[in-house]
Image (cartoon, rainbow, N blue to C red; front, side, top):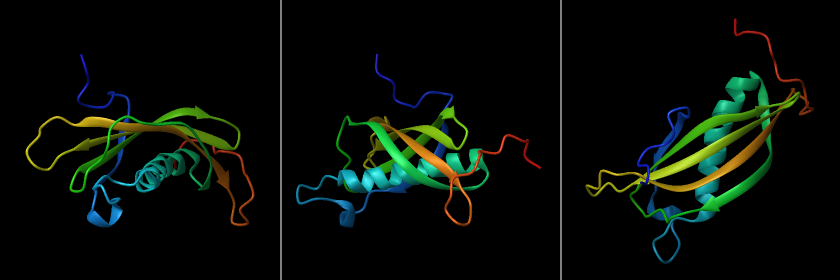
Length: 133
């Protein structure tokens, strides 16, 4: 049985529409555009977790499962995988839904993004562990 929604323990981090400028000559959305949306989504959760400025330092386990088409609603969901001393690793799942009446969303890609907490001089700093104030 296939899922038509992301896992319950992920949080919605970004929703956008795939536009013609984001497509290749075949009408499919460029993987690089999708990757940038996922990086943005992961950075939302990483920034909230680190409560500081962050920088992307790695992407691993990236896999494309299905194409995204022009006009699709693209939703990225993020889940904290690991919090280290200066880094946060976020699993990002991306789902697409046709705006032409299809009700079921389909999982189109996923990947793990690692971010490092940084200061104003762009030097790594510890992830804050104190409660939000």
